[in-house]
Length: 531
Image (tube, rainbow, N blue to C red; front, side, top):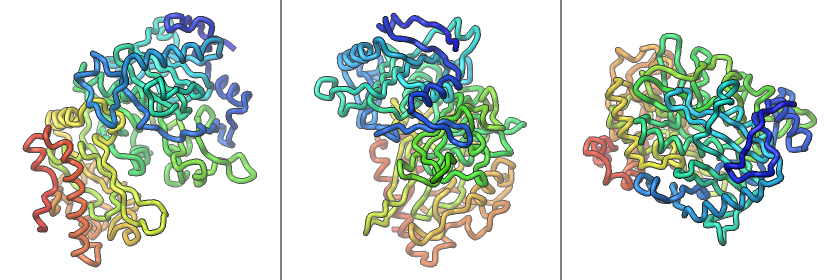
């Protein structure tokens, strides 16, 4: 075994055994030797992340100092913590790491070299370091010899804070310090905290310094440079719809949009795999092989075959893998200016059309709103949809006020003449218990029609209340499903639910109204149409 030596005394680590940039095989073997993981029949490494199988947004903090005080949108999402608490935790973590075996990886964020951020990640578990290898942009050769970190991430799942003295809510925490450019993560083994920590940092740095719009989205392109962006919260199809065998994948989660291109922040994918099938998602299915890291999944009984339908640990089953595991990945992962943007939403009310076109102001309003919905749990008597609004389709990772990102979006839409489409991947013909989910086949047909220019000459009608443009016809999609009201047997019930959803939008937007322009406010749903 060989690895590049490194001295971390500048971090206060004098005696730790540092293993730097170990190859994937070595990290997998060390995980197997320690009994912390198993190999699946596909060759992927399987691990359990323990108590936390997802992010803990209420335990995420940003140090309130002279760098962040005037920029950060402080509140329940961006919670402040004092620099003194950060320093105390940092010193305790350094003491904890002394004489331990640590896995260090030097990687990059941002495929566009003009915006590249060098990140040094320190882990206490080898499979955490495999995740870092999968998800960030690898550095080798001269890059490693000359590597100077811009940011550090220290992730120690077995280190726990003392809330009584450390200023945290719980024993687990994720803290960003923009002055010292360090992210501390402790008390949780969920690897998503690492990538989302760097994403959060970029979401403040890039707009303020470079005028780049950071986006929680997937992106793909074709050979002619027809780039498309897909925004959407969990369960709306962001990863599925961007993994198109006929197009090249730029990335599935985090991107930047500058004056010349769209570029991936990452070097890999972190896909949700509950109910994944080779038939419907062959690219993702084929990427789960040696080098991939599967989190919180079970085997099929009596085998070492992955059971994608088993959610006994969590519904948030995840797999990370490098981009080159995807057959049609675009490397380096950059694309031209996007011609089309898709806002994906799961509408559990069944009132939104499968596809509709937005004006720039409507796009800004919908972007700030970040709407989707999910069906309530199986508890008796609860059968109403649960509405979710997440500003910019990624509120937990956005340090600035959502209006700042929306203004950047609006500027870029105008400058590049980019079209924005709202795509409902949820229900049609009725709400939960009555309506049926819009078929993936029809959703793909809608998106294909946009990308191929099939809707360029089609007539549009204005949707009541929301004002979206609904195409009167779409190739390979039945005309009757394009207008959702047609599929409701009781038209008055449809009108009532549409008005109710509009009122939820308005109520959610109250928090942004004071900073919104007159044009954006005019783009919100007009419920008086049905008054």
